[in-house]
Length: 153
Image 1 (cartoon, rainbow, N blue to C red):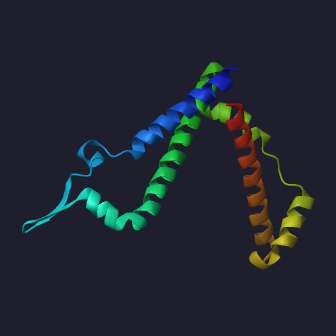
Image 2: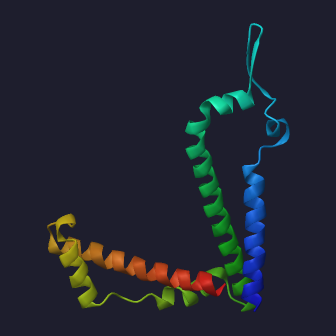
Image 3: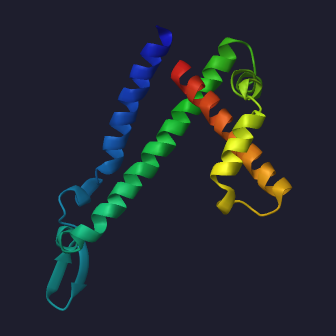
């Protein structure tokens, strides 16, 4: 129940923060800010943005995505801190117990399956290829454990 409330509060805060981050501040909101003056001519920010419109859309989307990703990470980190403190553990101890201790070593069958599936993309040296596959599968297991923790928090 407590994690549901935390999730709802975190989601609401994230939405408010992202909407606020996406809004221009001050005079930029009206677009009346001067972008350039030359001779008797004035180009406003709104005119500039209208002219550059299509080129800016992708950049605004990237800015939004970066802010969204960073905000989610900050919330996740804070929730880990709180959960660790509630159990009288350090963040590292809590993370180790909840994630790292649950990362499973890949089985021989998993290793062989990936080696076979991606043989053409792997180094020709069998030992080196095997090392890359084991690292990949281990990282995949860690990502799964982190997803479980995120859902739990």
